[in-house]
Length: 108
Image (cartoon, rainbow, N blue to C red; front, side, top):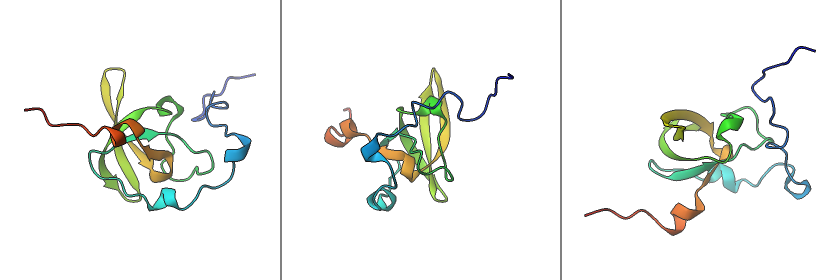
């Protein structure tokens, strides 16, 4: 058989959810508004495919919100040594726990 190279190839285990996590999430996820400079984790939610679904390469990465684009957000992520800008829906983002507890301090 011919090998297929679709957008979601080899993502079976990454996009799988636990039994208790299946189904749609609460509306709280849709009501969060991220500000510029917020550190966010990119976690692709397989229950929502239509709007701004990230490539599996960026699953689990941490990026910085640059701006808002429509109903999605522009997120800057470092891929190897290159900065990349991704357009991701808010259902696939969550605030980074480390940066929530320890906000960056200004250097003097």
